[in-house]
Image (tube, rainbow, N blue to C red):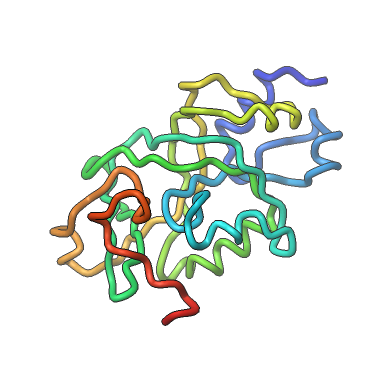
Length: 189
């Protein structure tokens, strides 16, 4: 088996895929994988999480929780109360979210789902690992808590100016935070 240090060095430095030739058995089992950080409606317990686990859309594995290294404004905007992470590094809050390993098929679905590149743009960001699922270690990857991973994240570079005056959050969860506006499901629009 390959060393954890080798696997993590590949994950940390190359978000376009996490595993290379040195770990062929894992590639054969799961294919090329990318790390993705989700902070909004795709998280567990949120209205669009089912897309992250729907194997008809691709393979996704929940890995754990993390927090962005940089601060960003996370606002809830538009008539459907959609969470938008604005691409303004250094302002707002460090954002809490979830880390997933996804295959190319699910990554392509997420691009389409997020309206990339028109609505959101997929960018690599540095994320501190807060918790890591033990079951993911069966994939041969288990970073220490506090390590930094490079993950893809969907954020907005174009937005209405007034969004900058909206409340900014470090965590999206309108079911727990009753001050957050409630998301309007796509089916109800």
